[in-house]
Structures are given as C-alpha cells and as structure tokens.
Image (cartoon, rainbow, N blue to C red):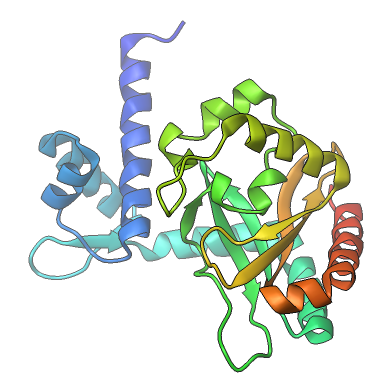
Amino acid sequence: MKDGHERKRARGIDRAFDILDHLRAVKSPQRPADIAQALGAPRSTIYDLVNTLLDHGMLEEADGKGAVFLGRRLYFLGLAYDEHFDLTHKVESVMQEITERSSETTQFCMLDGDKYTVALQVEGNRPFRISGDIGDRTPIPWTASGRLLLGGMSDEEILSLIPPEDFTLPGGDRLDVARYLAEIRKAHAAGFFSFDSIVDTFTHCFAAPVRDRAGRCVGTICIVAPKDDAVTHYETYRAMLIEASESLSQTMP
C-alpha cells in the first residue's frame, strides 16, 4: 500500500500533466493564475509545479509578464518517440497512396486519454478543404473511429473511460449509450465503420482499425469525403481502407 508521501507525489505528477494538457488545449501562453483557475486547483500548487516544469524545460517563459507555454524539451521527446514508433512513417506512405487514388482526405486517428484525436493527415485534392485539426481532442462518441478504437474494451471499461457529458452531441441531442455500445461491437467484428459525420454535416467518415499482434486497435485509417462522393464510391473506399488496415496491422509488433 502506498504511503501518504507517494500518494501526494502521484497527485503532483497528475497536476503537472494537467498543466501540459491544458496549455496544449488552449494553444496559447497563460499565466499560472489563469491555469489554476481553469483547472480548479490551488494557485500555490500550480505556481510550484510551473516552476518545476520550467526548471526541466517542459515549459518556457513566453513573455515578461509571467505567461508560460510548452517547452522545446517536449519537442525533442516527441522526436525520440517518433523515431522509435515507426508506425507513423509506414502510415504516412499508405495515406499518401489512398489520397492519390481517391482524391479524398485521409487521416490516421488515435485515442488521447479519454478523447479522440487526428494524429496524421493528408488533405484531398479538392477545390474546397475537408480536414480536421491535427492534435485537437474530440469526444470519442462523436467519431466513426470511436466505434473501433474501443473495440477491445468491455462495456464497463468504455463507460468508465468516456466522460458522461461526451455522449451529448454538438446539436444538443443525447447519444443512446446502448446503441453506441452495440455499434462498437458490430464495428469491431466487421473491422470497419462509416457514418455521416456528426461534427461536419457535409461529410461522410470511413474508418478501419490498425491492430497490433494482440488484436488491440492502436489507431484507425480513415477517409473523410463529401456525402455525394461517399455514396458513389462507398464500396471502393471501404475496400481501400480494409486493405490498408490489414497491411498496416501486419507490420505491428
């Protein structure tokens, strides 16, 4: 059993990550007092952690008024991860090929904690832009990929992971949880899912899982297309993604 010092240390580490996640979400420098208010945390705690993160290069001073932002050490850590995690390089090549063949936007999506995010993207060759913002965190139930990324979890694990408010859709309607869980099971078995986008009313989203050797979905390869094109080329796009997902899954450790 952990003693009080270990539990306090764990809470401090959690708060430090909360600070980094918050700055990533707002995408702009903030003062420690503003961070404390946003996180609902004591100012003294946030000031102490900000100073520690500054000392280690995880944060950097952004102006002369006390505002801080993500530090360059995080960039170098990201480079090291990218070099080790070779999947991104393999995925980029596959995505380029899909976009060249379909002219549609192709994405590679992953879980980021209790949210979904677009990790990589190749924009389609169209006169109007269809894309997502890389790194933005979106409620998992709002996405086609969210039916695949959770396929290896039990119902209890899924409901424990997803914040209850994330089942409320952008228009204010409440997503039926039982239906969502059933869609996850069906998508997991089929190795594919698509639907008209909940976030963008003009597009249709296709997704197929990239699985590791244990069968866990580590990411999804996706096509985002205008609804009319999605109807016309549905079977072609579905076949492209399933072929790509199977090929990428074979390269996973």
